Length: 168
Image 1 (cartoon, rainbow, N blue to C red):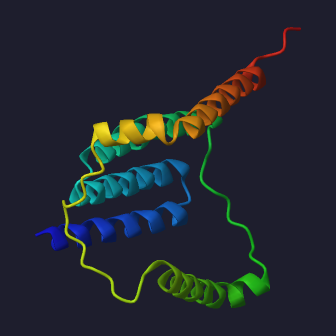
Image 2 (image 1 turned 90 degrees about the vertical axis):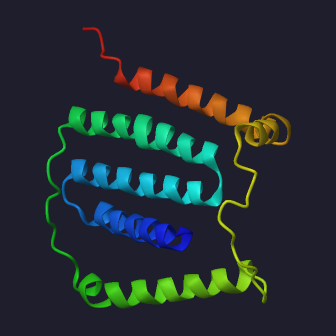
């Protein structure tokens, strides 16, 4: 049953990811991104990381996607205009993409996996609980966490300054 759910979630994530890139309307792309995030949350659930799955759905599937859709609506973005591709892109685009994917998969296979890969048992990982993440986040990764917090604060202040209208 776990293998069937994995295949369904993986195919859905890949399909929604392709749809995300190929859509011409930004709202359709945003909805496809929600499909990708939901599929990833299901994959996290299969691995036994319930907290990470729910954080994925709440933070990315909820808050970030609402922000994306509001920005798209505020910008009043219409459908993407079709541009004439260069002759080189028309001829060499797909073969170069295929070569890149083959090369990338070869490099990942050779550098990441040892010669004997053990089987993955779904639900056997216990590092996805809120307690385990909290302990790691506030002990080992405290400095990067605080640096990211300061960077987000600076980005928010920059957005407020840029969005502020000039008083005539």
